[in-house]
Figure 1 (spheres, rainbow, N blue to C red):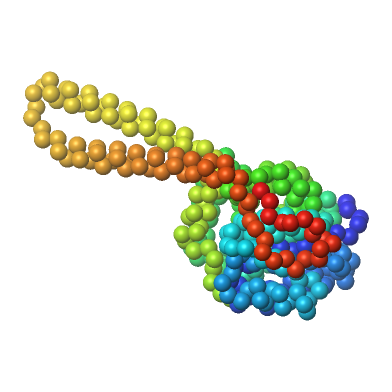
Figure 2 (figure 1 turned 90 degrees about the horizontal axis):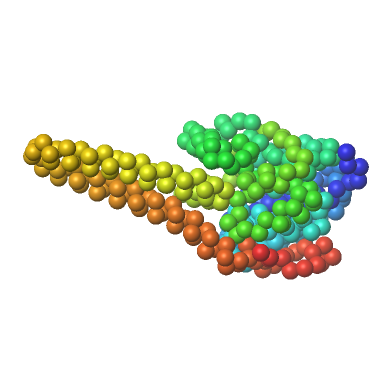
Length: 329
């Protein structure tokens, strides 16, 4: 059990979210005010909006709110680093002065009222609290079932994820310090956080409709995200390519035996159909194999460069809280 009141930071990554910022700020401010009144967090707790290279008025709105809302602070990245990069920037920045950090998307699909239970679990001694979707009725049939298929696939490949958990979670300072030891550029938070260990808990909530604006994760990005997750944590795809190669060799050996037998029996066959099919099938398999191996080589190439995962252009944070330049490996 923790007795001291924690300084809580809520990290909210934003990319072209001007349509939802007013309502998001309103709801999170209400949550923070209630927690302070109930003496469950410190009064100097923070809502940290991270602008991930927005092209609309997102940053202008954040700056305005920092002047009128005592909870709100802002972090503007120098360009778009992607959702995971923005989350890492916010978590590492807030982790410098916070006792615990909660990350949540700006679209209000994740129930903000679950934060009360997050804080309860933190006071009980949990270092990581996962927000887990109890129901996905607001998702389309396709999205709901592809998500379940993804979690099942990752589990079979040896990657231990929390099913129906996105990036709505609480992390204690101890967990954040441990997380900062993971320096890879190809970051996949849903896979890394369970590796940290420590005492964890789950809070279940119902996912809601997006308050306004458009989803930042269309099908193309969802597929890319899934590929990143698989290739960042598992070499099973390369093993599958190896076994596929053995399988094709066995088929080739069978075709060779069959061809010799036909030749010895002096049967006349044209062979064009089987030849063309073999070329296309084997050629396609080879391209897939090269693509899978290339994906891993590409990740190795990026990692060897050791480039920063994000860069900060502007920060409204108090200099007493952040004493060093943000934007490290």
